[in-house]
Length: 253
Image: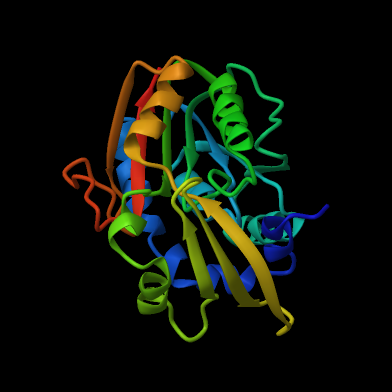
């Protein structure tokens, strides 16, 4: 059965690049560089790389990046953009639950809900973290963003999405947040690159900080820091609050 996140990204690459939530690339890469002390000898894995915006920006800055994604449409656009910038980037089609790498990378990034937490079960989400961990050398670092489970306890997800959505963006409606599973069920409406409208029944898992800490610790990470994730302005000074829609996780082995 084809899942909603697979249907979403079919023929939805150019429009995806125009979405408001994809406009923070420069500032996010600034943060990544600071976290690895500008060490250009390190190998970086970009999980759920989409159209390659972080992979391309980091490669422009001199880093060695491999990008992986499940969507052929998104990867095709990533390769087109890399070619436009005369960049050689290794983009590969993989399911993040089953990566072929082992002790190959110094840093893994997974930003803007690149894969985690879109999966249909908690076990699948954990498999993504486990596969990424296997791909990392030791010591190695993981930087990712995920949905903040504290936010829907105090705010309406539907109202938040409506307030941050521009006319051209995907829209979200009929949100229903399940307090037992911490999943938000919604109808996402997008217009693909051919101008066709798609209406998808989606659900995403929100995590509270203590859950993320436990998951990461169980994979052998020694240091785990969690912050608020501001679009294009990641910072260790940004303490996570109930007003943050996303959290930023920085974990070291």
